[in-house]
Length: 234
Image (cartoon, rainbow, N blue to C red; front, side, top):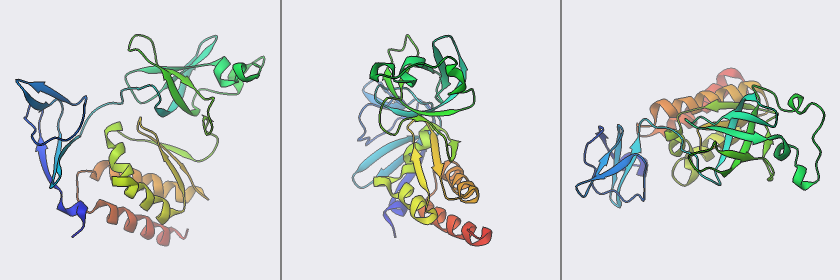
């Protein structure tokens, strides 16, 4: 029996007491009369080494340093506004996008280079809960996403998509041959050799999202990808 199958899962409702938690601060847990209680519905994963609380619902709360994938929804005179799959809307300045501080220049019509509907991989550089999260793309690997596809999932499902020590995401990569980047805000960037493979991986990601509470999921995801590749001839 695999380690994944040895985990006991207990449904926890809002207000229920949770015991044996080894986690540090968690926005989905609160203290009441010296006891930890759940703020949202979730699952208590009970293992020999302790328990962890996995929320079934929740949102992405921005933190400085996070790498996120944002969707451009509108723009003002000096910046773009991005949906980062959170209650908070993020901003990306024109000067940052074109690297003005690094010697870049802003073109006459900057909004033809980054349009509404484009996805951007960026890092959160500032957020104080009063002003919108500020983004930068001035790091290696960041910027407008120009290839592949982006899938949006509930942010609380990100740990399950990655898996323990990266086991789930490595299974997806090895079974599909695709490059998969999972952002902390619940957006997954998939780049494959062709669109059919991208569709298969996207379906696998959605499968994990809906079946995250079940056991033996890693093996089923691997089997799903391999079977779909065989059926679709890729």
